[in-house]
Image (cartoon, rainbow, N blue to C red; front, side, top):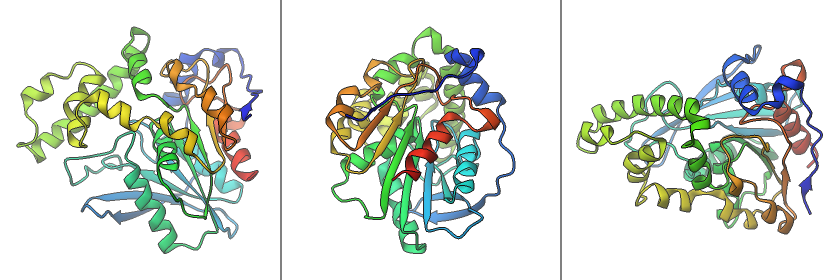
Length: 319
């Protein structure tokens, strides 16, 4: 019965979901983390950039961190997580998903919420080149959906993989998409769309035979972007087909290692279907914590350590 009670009670301003989301996304800064970049070549001819940071003590465990939509390994929630894990005896490997490391990726395809093939290659690279006894996963938003999908869809995960944490996870991509289309989220969806369209114009220059300016002009919402680009570039029929096949919700019953989902009740990005109460009740390895507060990837915490970072370390250290 892994429904985890939450004692997260932030100060008054951070009880507002939008304030928490915007403060953490725009104003929070994390200093003092040293990252070293490694580029790995992928089987399909593309590449990924991994940003490593190390614990001060010799360690046999590593956490692989995955950012959210239009994020990267330098976003505060990733650097904050890496720093907290490093301070607690974990090395950290922060993935920059395709096209998110400051350099456009080589192929027409890029990253998406269900691109577990890339995560498989990163895990295999870590296994092939390092000697960690324990590997853990932690992902935010899109990254959380990606890692939970991976854990539930793969028949046999490596024995070194011991546990996972997903924060602000859109377990139902359709439900999350519907929420982002609402007026309450206009400021966020417009910002996402601006960044995504800028990258799509670069793709048009690289692959003029695959997408036209006329196609791009059809995009007025994030769902349109998934209809015009995400779905077509990654082998799906349309946005709804992409959402249906890549939502982690359907894979949660198959997860076989301890995995925590931390989704705030006042997360304006998440619809009702993004809170997998039933799946957590029926799977002894799936833990669901739903605090009243936190917004989307907000979770303010004292000493500039977010509650999500604190809970991630606590949960994975307990395994």
